[in-house]
Length: 108
View 1 (cartoon, helix red, strand yellow):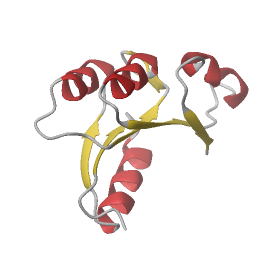
View 2 (cartoon, rainbow, N blue to C red):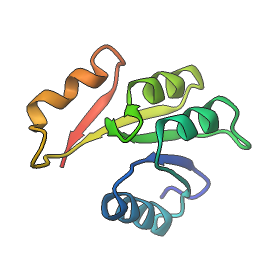
View 3 (cartoon, rainbow, N blue to C red):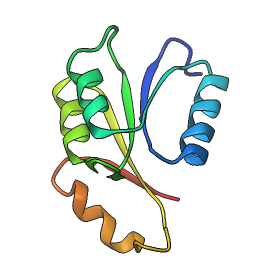
């Protein structure tokens, strides 16, 4: 179903990121897994091959996913913001990080 699609996964959590990568690869996608905002921005602004879609966590160790989402829009890639509940942060507060980016949001 995703054969030939190049998808960037921006997720710092090993379990969440690993499961996303595994599933996307099983569907035939070529997946680039990035764990930091700075690396994701570099990969999106100067990709070796065009990126079709970005799945991005909105809370990362070195910032929010907002600049990643904007960079994906600049490169005309589809963006999906992923948010999930943690003990520290309630899911209801996390959409603020991506408000105004025109994203599709999914809660886990």
